[in-house]
Length: 365
Image (cartoon, rainbow, N blue to C red):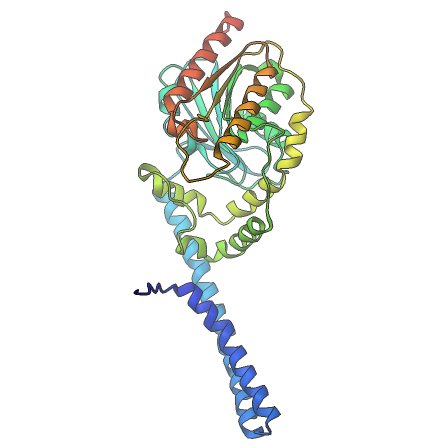
């Protein structure tokens, strides 16, 4: 049976850099123990020279990598500029992209990791009947890193400041996908008079588990350290996605600070869930919960798939208890990214929520 051998240049370089000194050190030790002192001295002299050469090589590669990362970032920002505007909200800027006319204004918030591009298929359709804004949270997309903790309370405040400074006017219909559901629920409680309705797109639940294993932590720390030197970009570990915006995704997800933001937000999930758990009900505020299809065909042979999906559906149904004016829709055939798998369902949910909101805010539009 033929053996398939694949050459990995990065892995091979690491093995060579670490392995060669160890081999020389072992050889020198054996020579010293067996009284071959001249040979031992030559080995250790070569080891010192080799380590010096390796340090110089690593330094040169770091300079080359950092230059590659910096030049690529500048080039990509010129080729794929932010479609919206960068708004200063107090020493750092957030990216806000708005289109369309008509109120109430729809605000789109993506999941734990993402950007305004997550709404690529939804925003143009909503813009046909309403003003709609997507944005990048601090540290993602085209936004600057945020100095604030990655908690729903802090991100709701940032969104409020962003919309205010950008000149956007309430009331708003807030749309939150996955983890973004925490943010919009927090916003609705902190700024209740500004919110006309909420759409949760397979939104997170305070009781869901999002384990942050040591392997995930190690991987993100490694990416965080190597990103300024261009390794994730060179190895194509960042970016990708649908062909229609793959280049733009590479431009925004290969930025050096993305991995620190990802680590901080993942680590903050339990505390963020606890913040949302303490929130009260929404009264009769229009709420539309859009959930993925628990009966869809699984992408792998996972024996726990059906059990996990039924548990998730139960959590989604519990979200309906947040409002006495709630609607539930299951997006047939869709996975977690409903706005990509079934954008038509998300758009329809937004339209229905807007109709309810307009009745509540009669005379405001």
